[in-house]
Length: 373
Image (cartoon, rainbow, N blue to C red; front, side):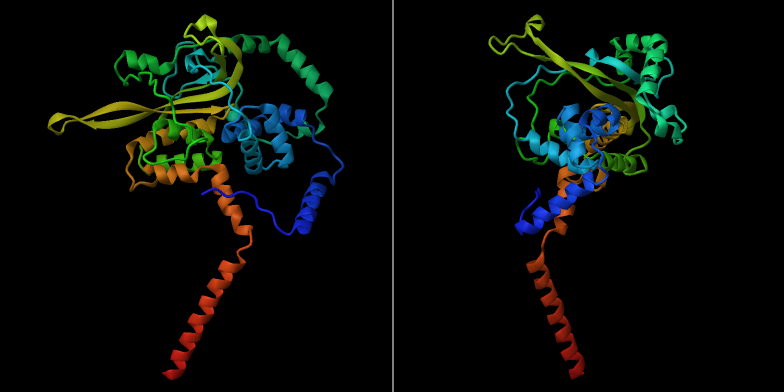
């Protein structure tokens, strides 16, 4: 069930909106959209992922309007997304074509192409940097100039590379099942309501749109014992994926006839999960299965959590909350869950008075029975 904003008491609402505007402007400071876009990369990536809408500029605008509240920013961006016409469909994206900026494996030390740490806070001390309070644009220009003339050149060169997938080597050894391409047209949960049992395309779409905190929490519950043993990151990639459109006048399957329209930054995770499979005569065999996650932007925690839930939902044991697709998919959506909780602030005068009358009536009956005794 979806909840949206409602209006009533026009004058009071107008004054409330003015007060909200005052709270945003009372410091006499204007937070430029381009400043948000330049300096809040993590928040922008989160909002784009949960909105299913790739636009760093509009995500920054939504963040400004929402005063940094990611849930409200997602609501705004999804609402805007729903007004846009869908004119074209891109060709199917091949993750192997990613221009890799960051690529690690927790399963293997030495991987073809090497580990690329890229940009990550994983290796920092997580201590407040008070120097940032005095940072100036001149400092930024100086640092960037030094970086570009030193290690930065190597980083830019590495970001141009296209690297083989780690799991492909396990497939060649027969240690993990092949994953043939499924050409079935995917379901679209933004156009048709979710039904159960959900298709794999619906599950993956809702997982990648899910609220980052909710997806992470449920994945944490999985590895704490709700249905899965400890998984291992086979490969995590962050990089740019090219987008191509068919010739709108003469659609063909010729690669040379497609139009390149740009790139999107994504995070992709392939998670390895040990699985015990029962063979003939009750013999059990240990095999490797995998879960998959892909999100807009550099959104590593969510992509990892998504891959864990992807594999967990495949088990389908409804007695286990994290394997119950209805439980998981209905409760991780940012707009649905936030809207339902927020609707509790709306007037419930009639329903509450009805409950209050029931309480009074019950007490009156109990009081009368007590007197008769």
